[in-house]
Amino acid sequence: MNKKSTEELEKILGTTHIEDIDGYLSENAESILSSYRPFSDYIRSIIKEKGLRQQDIFLDADIPERYGYKLITEEKRTRQRDVIIRICYAAHMNLDETQRALKYYRMPELYAKVPRDALIMIAINERPGSILDVNSFLKKNGMETLRSSGVQE
Image 1 (cartoon, one colour):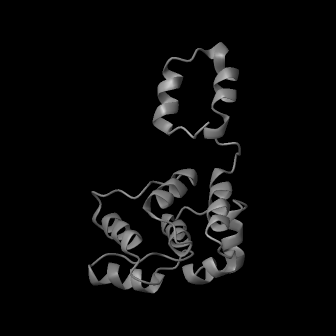
Image 2 (cartoon, rainbow, N blue to C red; image 1 turned 90 degrees about the horizontal axis):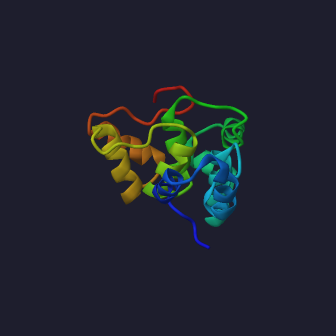
Image 3 (cartoon, helix red, strand yellow; image 1 turned 30 degrees about the horizontal axis):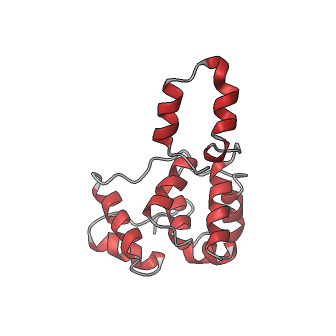
């Protein structure tokens, strides 16, 4: 069995009757989120897969460690997408992984038609250095820098 995309699952659901939900869930178990904390599960799997340490990620993201742990476990929530983007960048996540993390956190994905988002997408793809370098890139192009824990740099 291989994982199915959201689009594939939606197509299957289009022809699935309500009484067949158990079959749908069992046949597609590998592709369905198994937790009420999908962001936490996802980010932890990425961190493990990449052989990173959480405290290093928080340091690189310039986020207080205690706050970062609470965000990753979803014990605490933030409404600031920039904080999640910082964590994703510090975790060396590519653009697809970052978009998925934002979606799991129930935040808007980066949108190519928004100039600031486009610059962030380029930074994620090109990895110009640290978060400070990303912020310099944003500032140089007349955009707001990535916020950290509610404080604008």
